Length: 231
Image (cartoon, one colour):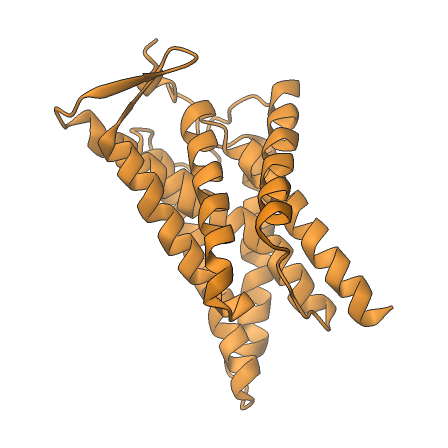
C-alpha cells in the first residue's frame, strides 16, 4: 500500500480519539449553552469561544473520513491503537514541552475549574480540525498536483502543497490562541508547536497520538497555573 493511501478502509480515528473528541464536543457545548447568552461580556466571549470549538470539532470528526474517501458513519471502522501510539504521544509531548521551555513559558491566569477544563478539552477539538481535517485536506489536494516530491526518512515523500498546508494550519491555530493568551508575542511558541503537531500527524497519520500529547500538554500547563492561583 502506498504511503499516501495509508488511510485505507479505516477511519482516521481510533476508539480513544473518537471518544475524547465526543467528550470535548459535549463539554464545550455545555459551556456554550451556559455562557453564550450571558449579559456579562467576558462570559459571553467565553461562550462564543467554546461554540467555535464545538463547530471545529464536529467538522473534523464527521468530515475528515469522507474527505479521505471513507463513507460517512456515526460509528466508523476504527483504526487499531497499539503501544506505538502512546510512545508517539509521549515523544510529541516532550518535544513541545522543550519548545515552550526553550522559548518562553506561557503565562496563564486560570481562576476556575470550567475554564481549566475548557482548555484541556480544547485539545481534541483542535487536533481533529487543524491536524485531522486541514492537513488531510492538503494531503488530498497534493494528490492532484504535479509538484515535486521530497524524500524524507522512513520512505516518506512530501510535497510543497503539504508543507504549505502545515504552515497555514499552524498560523490559524496560533491566531486562535490569542483569545487565551492575549499576547501576540507568544504566538511564535504556538505556531512552532502547531508545526510539530502537523508534521507528526502527516508523518505517522496518527491522530490519537496528537490528541493525547496535546491533552497531556494542556493538563501540564493548566495544572501549574491553576495550582499557583488557587493554592
